Length: 311
Image (cartoon, rainbow, N blue to C red):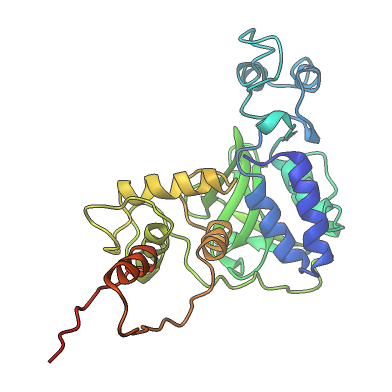
């Protein structure tokens, strides 16, 4: 898991590189995966005191009070400090938010203000949006906010961020990945200030996970094998099974990424950097070498030896 300090550094780098607001929103959402949910919060540092403040508010639902306590090792009495807590990676803080707090903080980082005290008021405030409507009309190549309408109450009960292609990242329990089909999303809104209709950057690879098949899986498996991960006995067979998922998780952990076993844009980028550019390869034949020298070269660089026969 990434820390808040790491995110702040990455945000500065992304802005210095001239990335678009849409690109930064996507990268930020991916970077915040597994950050903790706390009802009523919107980007405060994750500390026992901050958790206690939101837990003790009269308006905090009882179920959320229990969740806040359960997921804090200090508040639930498991430990006396935050040391070793999942939400304090390398003893650095993450940040707490609820669903609408997550949307607001992610958009705030690119200079966009979303008004409203909750998901319902945020959606109903037309000054927030370039355009909005039902999820069936949502453009799949745009970054936008998505909402789930509860017909029994007439309210928006949940919100998240669409990062392109039907993929959603939202805060429920913690920041997690989903899709438009998994959560029952009903509405969307493209925020004002997103520089018009900015398309989500087109990925060079599909997002793949356990159960995926095809050439992207073969490429991922090939990269993992090059990096020394064991995919035997199947190798690069184009089928994303348990062995490939385990290797992906190990690679993500080593690379400082969220170890969810899903190969999305950040994991593809890390794989590409780890493997390096594809190089042109040549075979060199060196004649008349002593046996010991030839064995040394083959041992260091690989290849085969051919004994010369004098006529």
